Length: 77
Image (cartoon, rainbow, N blue to C red):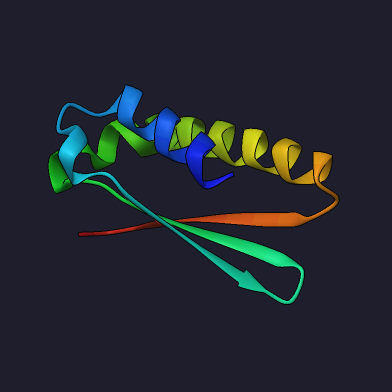
């Protein structure tokens, strides 16, 4: 799942070197933390949060295929 979020984020941003994805396993729940450059936050979040919500939907589908639950946190730099 970490690789999926990393791939999506690197395709969206201009500064791909600033993309950082960390995965934490909290007793059956997977929490993924995404950090991007400050200038790329708008690209990852999107208008009204549409892009971020779409990424979260894809993450939930990938997690469901592995019988897990996952959440995505987009962290401000």
